[in-house]
Each structure stands twice: as structure tokens, then as C-alpha cells.
Length: 437
Image 1 (cartoon, rainbow, N blue to C red):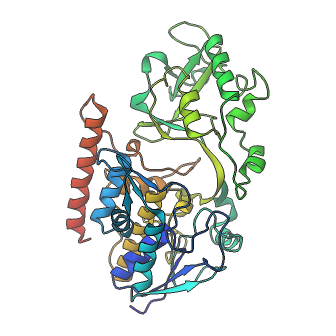
Image 2: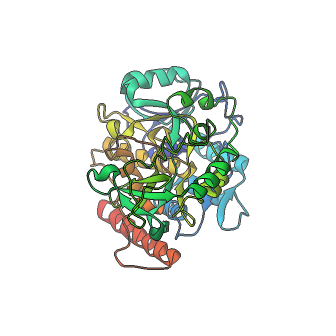
């Protein structure tokens, strides 16, 4: 193929996109600014550098991460091939030797006859077809160009998200459904607190340990102005959050007939109601501290956290307004975006988006229709999340709450998740056969 094709960024997403395109016979240029220039978070010159943990999360099929990895394996993922080759012992998780992992992917890409490696910072959107996979720490020059292309109002520089819990892990005997002042449908799950419960929760919240801020992460200084972390607000006084996100006004507990001392509200996160977010609970607490402190909220004692709250430097798009489910820019079908910039969160999720970009750009160049994977697959669910209308879009990692619920009641959670995962793999294989993927 002679069409000019560029992949910007050789992280997990860019590496995966470049590999799939090259394997499909597309000649391309893979741009990576390392080793000429490093972001503040990167230090190793190789591709697909794992900056934080060396874990790619759970391996078992009946888990969100295990299912996502199995789907990617079936689709020929380079990330999964490298992980299998470079795996280290990690119990039920898939962890890798991060240096070997990077070296493996780097060697594969550098040796591929269809890939030309271009070192140096990309400061403009390339001409021709392009996959932009420059990551959450995109250089200022390229971020400015992306802002011009997409509209600065659709480009966020800080990720400030509240935790999300699984609906089926909430103790419904301790909560009630209602909207404030009974306006509209009873859309909120309300977790009522009496004074003693509130004071204990407040004490633990203000004394919980926050995550450290990195030198390149200025969120703790600037994002607070427009999005106050719940623990910072709580430190302003004993009643600060009770007159803020935990205010009980307009709510009456039907079991007591009285207004609670304080109320934590949970709002539906997806249409099928499998996920709920904690309203107003943007936080910078460490993940174990979030689990410990937020489990004190009535009804959440045994809550399964599908996503913890985060607050850090993270360049990402308002993807529902900009991208379709193939990660293609709606306003310019030459341009695809991949990786954390699209609003997927995590190593394998980023690689997954690159894989889908590679598949769909390759099909476009061959004159074939793009593919949108079934919604009962993890890849299909995540790609739909990125594109689905959402007025408060925040990054999301893989979780079982994204998938359609199992039609019959299975009390054992692991058995239920395994059934959902097996359904997903059957659906994916059938889809691949029907669409010749």
C-alpha cells in the first residue's frame, strides 16, 4: 500500500496499532520522541515502557482484566505475545519483567519490514492517515495542535474522577432510592448516616493518607480550584461536607420518616444500572484508603470498587463528542486516537484501543467496513463507553459492570462473572468468523 500512514507514539497503544497495521501489509512510520526527548514520567528508551506497576492485572477468565486479555490474544495482540514471553511469577496476576517486555516489543517493531521508525518529537498532526497515541503526558506542542484540531473545550488536562461501585455489591437494606425533594424519578441511591456514623466517617476521611503528587503532576495545586477533593473539603470543618456533597436536604429516609444527619448519594453510571458513582467524591486518597474509608458509608461495607477516584495530570479527550466506537475522529476520518488519551484507563485497556485502531484503519485502507465489536465483549463494551453520550465523561478501565448483566440470577459472583466471560468469548469468536477478522 502506498497511502501515507503514521502512528504517533510507541507506547502500548501506538505499538499495538503499528504492529497490527504492519501485519496487515500497511507500510507506516512509527514516531517516538524517545530517546531524543523523554516525558517527566519516562526513563527507558525502549517502546511500550511500563511506567508504574509491572502488572497487567488478573489472569483468570472470570475477571474483567482476564477477559480483556483473552479477547486481545484471540485478535493477535503483540502486547499479549510479549507478556507471555516475559512473564514473571505473580500469583493470579499476569506480571512481566518490564525491561524484557519493552525490549521484546521494540525488537519486533524495529525488525518489521513495513515499519519505519522515526525518532524525535512530533509537533504537528501528520498529513495522511494517522493514529495519535501520544499518551496522557503528550508534549505541550502536540497537545496544542490536538487542541486546535478538536477544540480546546474538548481537551482535558486533569483527570478528576469519583469512585464507581458495582450495584450488586451494595447492601440495599441500608439505603433508599429517591431524588432530592422527590423531583423526577428516584434515580439516586441514598446512603443515610446518623450523627455518630457521620462523625466517624469524617474523622477517618480527614486522617486518611493521600497519594503522593509527582513532579510532573501539578493537579494537587491547580485542579483543586475547580474540583475540590472530598478529603480537602472535609478538612475545612466538621460540617463542611455535610453542607456540601453529603447534604441531606430534600431527602427523607422512608424507614425512619426523618431526614438523615448526612447522605452520600450514588448516581447511575450506565444505562443498565450495573455501576454507580459516588456523587461529589473526587479524591486523591490512596486506593487502599479509599476502600477502607468509603466502606464506612452505610450500604457500602462490602462494596466492589470498579474504579477508584483519581486526580492527576492526564491529557484526555471528551471522546463521546469527538470519537466514534472505532476511535476515529468524527470530524476527520483520517485521524484515529488510541491509548489513555481516549479515556480508557490502564495498560491493557490502552493496548486494546491501539489494537482496534489498527484493525479498523487497516480495513479502511482496504475498502472494508469498520468493525464495532459486540457489546457483550469487554473490548466492545469499552469502545462503546468511549463513544457513548456522556455529559461528565471520565476515563474508565475494564470492569464487569460495563457488560450486559447475566439474564438469570447466579448468586455466586465468580460463577456469574465466569458465565459472562464465556459468553463474551463465544460472541467474539462468532463475530470474527462472520466478519473475517
